[in-house]
Length: 160
Image (cartoon, rainbow, N blue to C red):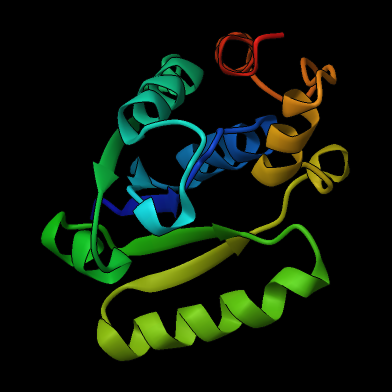
């Protein structure tokens, strides 16, 4: 039986922490779809198309990973695309309460879709897209936290 998973998020931008979890999920599941939420209410720094392109560049070497944009309920995307698992990352205990509530709601909406939590390695626990955006917008160096393509895109947007 083939098991497909989705790793949903805004990925604005995708970080090395995200990339680590994607690689680990790719080792656990037959196929992984990195699903990038349109999230217009969050006013993302990068357009949906840019976030998809960056995620494709970051994951290009992982054969069982694809990238797609989506709008709507995550569990509906999973159901309509034959994905059995939603992968979520937990960086800190503070993430758990929200993620636990979300997982329970998703289970209530679609009981055939499981949520699996992965924790990043210690070197990635403090990395978040919002911190990366803030550091980059103030001219800080984020090269150690993001893929070179993401760093180039951040520099282009922030004028650094």
